[in-house]
Length: 275
Image (cartoon, rainbow, N blue to C red):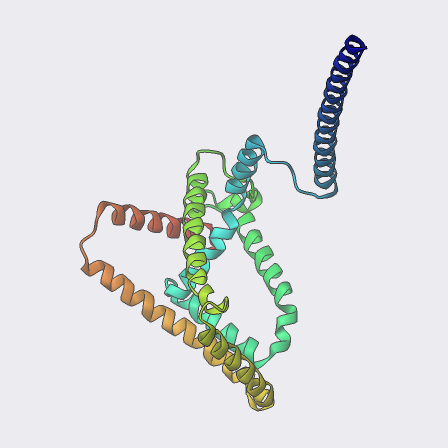
């Protein structure tokens, strides 16, 4: 009987060990299955989200192609920017005076804003037509053989392409500097300084209520007229002061390169303008 009990107890121990091993294996297989199910769910949700949105997946080749096309097609943006800066700098006095008079007309007769797109379209068509039928001095019959106006993007590596690339570089720097300047006011808007944020909130509510009460008494036409004309005058004096200060300072090689680039840009803008 003792031998039988010993054998029985020994057999029970082996059975318990086998059962525990089976349970451990079951838990391991269950954990592996759950991990696989979670991974498959995440991948499925990611693919469904990417399919439902219009965003393309990140690709170095796509980024390079899009940036190359952006450099080629961004010329009109910087041409308009250079033209606006030329107006503010008073590079062409008659043009600046024309814009000042046009702004005065818009402020006096605001209804002209609705036909402003028509005026811009007519001005563009007249400008391109003038260049289309312009005759060269050496060829008086050039009007019979009009020159086609080309709006093709610049070739990669050309002067215009490199100019656009330089303007994009400058634009990225200005956006970064502007973002840093705006972020410098974040502490006043995030209630880090509770007293300052509370004062700003009270001032915003008070000035808003006062503005609503005073709106009927404000001559907006005169206000916008004075603001626009003062911007033109102040910008002209500011650029004149900056140019005078730069001419008084010693010129570095970097400054010479920047001045040369600005002269080339202005010359290119003037060449593109109709005579």
